[in-house]
Image (cartoon, helix red, strand yellow):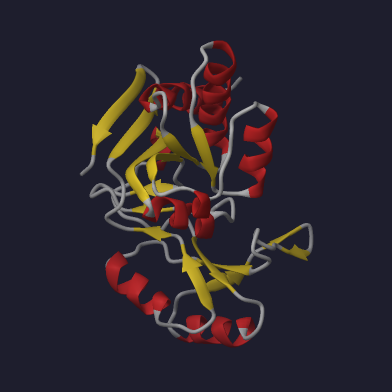
Length: 227
């Protein structure tokens, strides 16, 4: 196990400590959230923890189901007590980019109906400004080439996400345009712009949302209260 994997496992296990009996828990997607789901599954099996999981992707749903975690959809619960998820970048003022795993639409829906949001990351994800990590924008296929042109004309440097020569499809069967920006000087203005474009389903800017960040450092996990 390399150092980064070890840090991810460390914060995933630590985050599971925030989950208590009777909670409705948003289960995130990605390589760090994987370890959190594993630990919650262990607690359900070995310690009798009783929770309801609300997943943010088909991948996480399959994982949680295999571990015996009871699941409901976001439409079957009144709210979510806490959502624990990874992030691709977190800025010094605790704004975030998510969507490297193409799950940010479901992740944002679950986060929006959550009382508390915890992000779990290794220390490489903590940055001064957002933007080095390409910003994912989920778009419907119809009109996506027109949207691509609009984003390119605005110097947002879109790239259609592909894997093995095939266009990546999200769980909702949409495309992703990754914006290669290097530095986002005004995340709120960019979010407003993207929200205004027909065909954009959701973007990966998660602004003014997170309550707690757990950062994996070599000396151990550090808990930061963001807001």
